[in-house]
Each structure stands twice: as structure tokens, then as C-alpha cells.
Image (cartoon, rainbow, N blue to C red; front, side, top):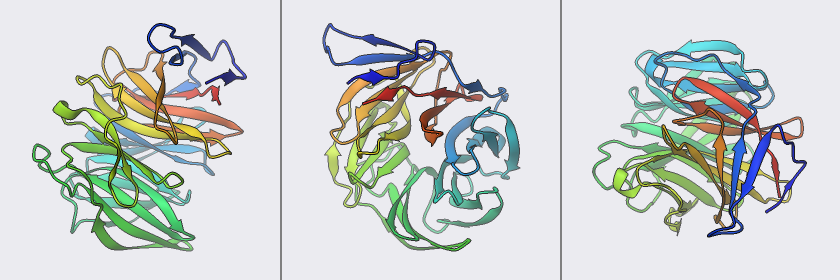
Length: 316
């Protein structure tokens, strides 16, 4: 791996030469912004709306959604969701915002102005957490949600799917089904990559702490454990950085109060090639990436209370 357009004030890169000469440690030490901290917030997941240049953050302990300017971190709007415990969030077609609400046992749908439009999944979901999607064809998407009810019991029905159809400003949801999967326990974060037909799933059960890769369509295991996680730390947020030639890399969060880090894996091979640290960022739940003005940015939750944004270095 090599880094181009290297900016000293932005990032420090240390190359390990002991056990794995190709493994890199990356330290991002110059944040683009840090949002004002929110006490007792329980900030969890982050979504991105490109045309509006905003991020949407679930604030589960306050039953709120916060909308921030993606360039300067200023709070633009707060939305209250009564008794909801909002957790996962994703955006479809830069038009709809989908939020899993654990205590309401459904997925709430908003437009890009964060006006509430409706819900789905209440007949199937019992404890929804993570959410992702992929495009099936023009106007039709597949939404996938992790369901972590009775998480101490091994189950193979923890990933549920729906068809999400867009017609102008309206949506329709149908065809609920279960993605066949290996035995899962406490699953939260989930991320779909349609191009390589890969679905990353974070397993948080302490005996099995790992991120696993499944086939996006069949649910069969592609890689049981991407590796490099300490069994004492939770795997949390997952994000993807894309290049024009369909290469890229995954970013997977290893949550810790004292050794918070982010593992980088090749998009296609899923091989681990770097570990990244964010200065003054700890105990990270959700992350997201965004491409704006020809650059990639990373947004990360810090200690359940604020969002810290960094410009990512170029990785080829």
C-alpha cells in the first residue's frame, strides 16, 4: 500500500516492520471539526445525505435524531422520537433516511428534510439494531436489518430483508424475508457491498467478538472472521471507502475506552492491511464515510457524546 498527497498536519503514518512489514498504523490527528458534546446522549450511528451536505446521528438515550452540517459540525435540527431508542441509520438514493427504532420495533422512514413519512417491519422485528441496503435495479432496493432479540440464544434468522421501492417522492415496502445466515447472537452493525456481493456483520457476543463476511444474496460465509479484534472489545461501526476502479477498503471499528481503533481491510480480498487511530476519539460506536469536493471524509462517534470528522488520506 502507498499513500499519495500526504499532508503532514493531517496524518501520521508509521510502518511496522517487525511481524508484518506491509501492515500500517495510521494516526489522524487534525480533525476537521468536533461537535459540541451532548450529555447523556448515547450517540450511536451516523448517516450521510450528500446533496444537503448533512449527517444524521441517532441519539438513542435521548430518543432523538440530530442533523449536523457535514462540513463544519453545526447542529441544524433535532427530531424527537418518543420512546423509540433509535439506533441504526442509513440513507437511500440521497432521498430517504431509514432509522431502526429498537423499542418501537420497526424502521422509521424520513425524507431528506427529516420529515416523518411512515414505518415498516413492526410485524417482524423484535429488537432491530443495524441497517443497510443495496440497489437491485432502478427504483428498487433491498433493505437488511439485524434483529438482536434474545441475543444469548444462537439463531439463524437475525438478518431480515425487505424490498424498498421508490416512485418519485413516495416509497413502498414489501416482500419481507429472512436472509439465510450462519448462527448469530448479538448482531448490530451491518453493511452491504453490492459490487463484490459482500455483507459485513459485526458479532458482539463476547465469546465471538468479530466481524464476519457473508454472501450478500445467499447469506453463506465468505470469511468467518476478518481478524485483528481483541476479544475484550466490541466490533461496532462499519464503513466503506470506494475508488473509481472499484477498489477500496473497509473501515471496521474496535470500540474501547483505552485502545479505540479502526481496522482497514481490502474491499475485495478482505485482507487486513492497516490499523487507524483517531486523536482524542474513544469508545466509538457508529462511523460513516462521505465523498465531497473530491475528498473522502470519516465521521466517528466519540464517547457517546459528540461527532469528530477527519479528512482521510488517499490510499491506493
